Length: 175
Image 1: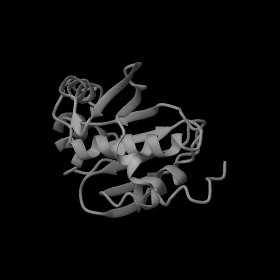
Image 2: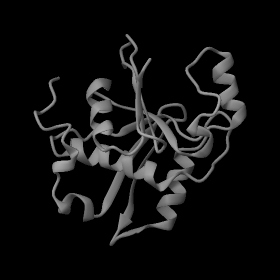
Image 3: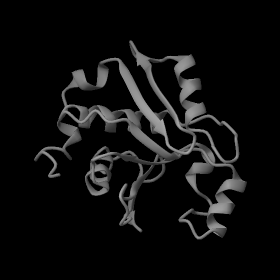
């Protein structure tokens, strides 16, 4: 699917886009969970919704929840809200959010891409995808927000690859 011509121009959005109430729709394939939450309204994060988002972004394997960087949640919301403007309303699939050091080490030992000092360990990163949206389009959109790192993970499978997004330094890589 070809993205609309202005898909990557997130900076061109009007102020209304950024001040409206924010609802996020997430799916966690590893646990089978799905949540759709109004988490920001009238300029404030809703505390109970934030707690629920921290739970769904938890380390599913290590069974531990940690605080998630609000800037990461904003990136996830903005991604979903931006593509919804073009009629794409699929939930955002979270493949990995917060990771315990043990879970991160296990990934490294299994040969799965994971940095030793990953921002996942700090609740500042997520690996995501959106059904029917190519990872290249998804990653370029997130990169256009200029809010942190974006990693492109291409996979020749039915579900395709995924995008790593974090709230660290602005950088891009492909794996």
